[in-house]
Structure formats: C-alpha cells, structure tokens
Image (cartoon, rainbow, N blue to C red; front, side, top):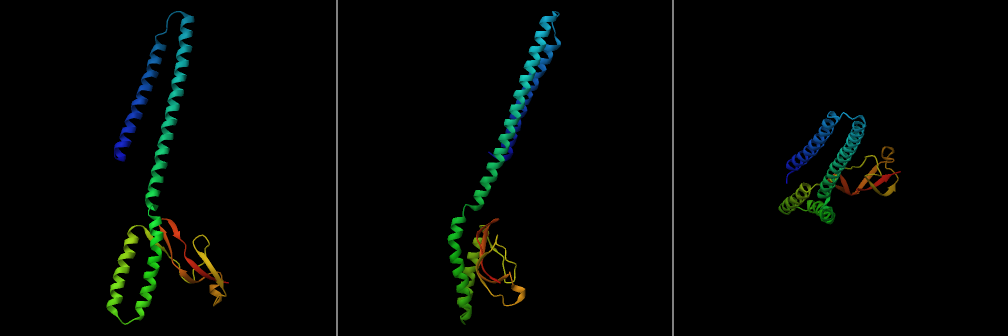
Length: 195
C-alpha cells in the first residue's frame, strides 16, 4: 500500500471516529434540551448528561493522544528504516575498501612504467570500480596536507615535528584515505600531524 493511500485511509478512519464522537455529543445536547418538567428529574438528567459529556470528552482526548502517538511511531520507524537501507551495505563497503586502496597503489606503480596500454586498462577498471562504489553511496572524506586536525573526523597515527610553523597542529601527511557512506563515516582518514 502506498504512503498516500495509507495516509488517506488513516485520515478517513480519523474523520469517521471524530464524526461519531460529534454525533454522540449532539445527541447528549439534544437530550439536555428536552428537559422534563420535574425539577429533581431534570437535575438528575443534567448531571448525568454532563457526566456523559465529560466521559465522552475524556475518551475523545484519549483517542487523539493515541492517534498522535501512533503517527509519531510511524514517522520514527519510517526514518529508522530509511537509515537502515542507507547503511545496509556498510559491511560490504568496508570489505571493499582495502581493494580500492590496492587499486590506488597499483595505479601509482603502473604510472611509473612506460606501458601506456596497461595503465589505460587498469585506469578504466579502477574508475568503473570507484564509480560503482560511489553509486552505492560511498564517498571519500576530503582531507589534505595543511588542513586543521579535527579529532572527530581524523585519526592521528603519529605526530612529527612540523616542517614549518604553518603546519603546527595541522595535518602534515595523509597515510590512508577515509570514506563515508551517506552521512556516516565508515573509515576515518589516518593522518600524521605536526607538533
């Protein structure tokens, strides 16, 4: 059932229940209008109708609260389900990252050779592999030498004396690229910082 159809059905049910509650309130008010001539009997009926009205109002309030809770539950589970779908292939992506790293290292080494056909072939496979992972939501965490170190998104491997004063407290070198799947970082970039 589509979300629109589901929402329409729920709104229809809600409207029907509210309509029935309103009808019951109208009936109680009509009975109140047809008051008997006997004063004692009239007072009993008024107090009884007031009591019924009050009970009906309490039930209507309970229903509306329950309906609101149910709507919140639906939204929460829907959001959780979307998040689960986004990160469902996280384990597979983590297993593929070392292969991607090996591809990057292989390209650097093949670039040193003079065999341009080999380089072109490996580049084609590498690009196809990288694009496939990108289409599934994998993105590199952009970090470069000279960026400010942030412990929330970087993993410091070691500290070395900064080559110059500009790199003190900043990233000197990136040892291993980091990746994120959707908005969640699944592998933090490993960096060397300057002190």
